Image (tube, helix red, strand yellow):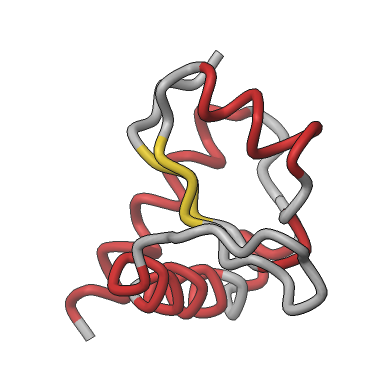
Length: 93
């Protein structure tokens, strides 16, 4: 199981029983904006949610590299090494 302090997701994951409830029971901060048709609107950290696009943009840049997008390396160790290499190239560019 992965340990996390917060979970950032879009409105599609605004499900109380399946997503939000289990996360809050484990003490994880839920950063998911409520859907507009929700009867009870709940608060969320809007600043942290706005930073979510940086993570999405990074994954979009990672997927521009063919070996990463198609998972060319079948061994997880080699694949992770490729991600480290591509991430370094992205950060240096």
